Length: 157
Image 1 (cartoon, rainbow, N blue to C red):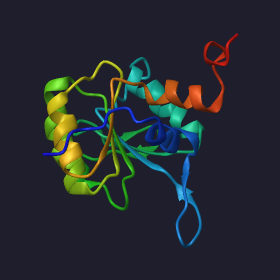
Image 2 (image 1 turned 30 degrees about the vertical axis):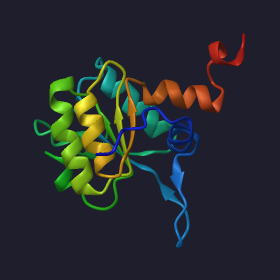
Image 3 (image 1 turned 90 degrees about the horizontal axis):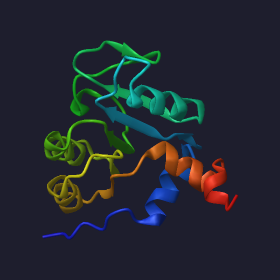
Image 4 (image 1 turned 120 degrees about the vertical axis):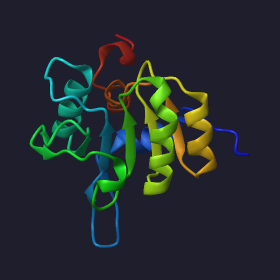
């Protein structure tokens, strides 16, 4: 049984430090599937996803109740998403996280990112046993700001 290594700074830095992934044919945008992405601009998931788009990430909405969010086609589940998925960000209640972790493993994602407020040791264990890195209870956008130096709080100001 794999013991999850949570919130590894090297993993966080890799995900948020660059919005691109180097591949043999040249760099491509890092694909972030956001499970539970809301189409409501007032929801945190929408605001975070919009900011990630502005930073250069390819955001893929995963929401069975939507057809399009932020100008991107929405998919009912991770299995339906075409092409590579690098990071799965979970904006769902913690009780849904284990099922999302299983989907992320089956999909071949590299990182399961449980957004701030989403804590699921079971999801972390499932993901780790499937070979995924796990970030839990952290906001991907706040981490991007921290690593890229955009928040005065983290710069000692």
